[in-house]
Length: 295
Image (cartoon, rainbow, N blue to C red; front, side, top):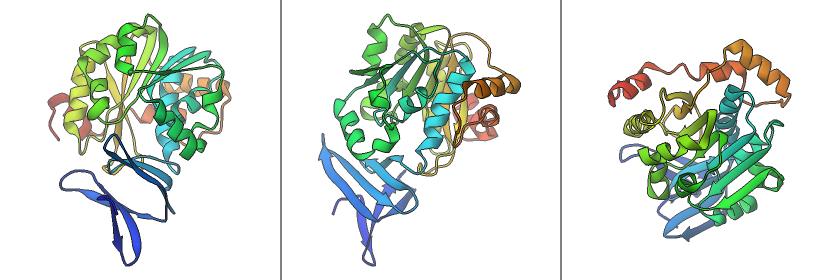
């Protein structure tokens, strides 16, 4: 039995140790896959509440029951804020959930997805096919197996929206939170382009949020953040970075009109009201952005 699985009264439990002081557990109803890749522990298991889950080195990465919250808000906030996005770049996102939501927009003509490991895509297709829901077969997709940071540094392509669907800033994902990476993303955006970044759980990771903010501020005039709550991610509200190359953010009436005309219902989480409300940050998060300290 691995260091992330323990047994109580004949039942197996998965333990996620979020910090040195905090952890939580999920009952394992069925283990579908468990192994080691590059000295990292991988497990796919089922839980009655969360459905099918994937954990990497002891941390939950995705759950089939609540992934719609993250993916809908990651994608539809920038696409509706832009209003006419035709070219989208996804960095990371190997589970296919982001491109699934991107391709619901008929205005999108092209999407490049850059994933550092092709095995991540293959793994997701095998164990989590409902998340991508056929998106890898969409003819608008250009799948590139490469380093996302190197891709934005070297490419001369322009995109209306860049989605950085990354892990936390450890290991290979660390470079996707640096000032250099954000600086390289900036010229890849069109005149009114938008970049979205995954910025963690500020209640437990205030330094991660503050660092992302300062690094983005070096290349973008007014980066801001919006929040979502994904039940499978222990630690409360999650923040997503929102940085514009130019243009204005639409008001609620304009957003509502765009959502209605897009005709891509039903959403399970996203709405024009949820979009606008997500930018109303709790005071403690604003304090972290201002001072780097938990308020």
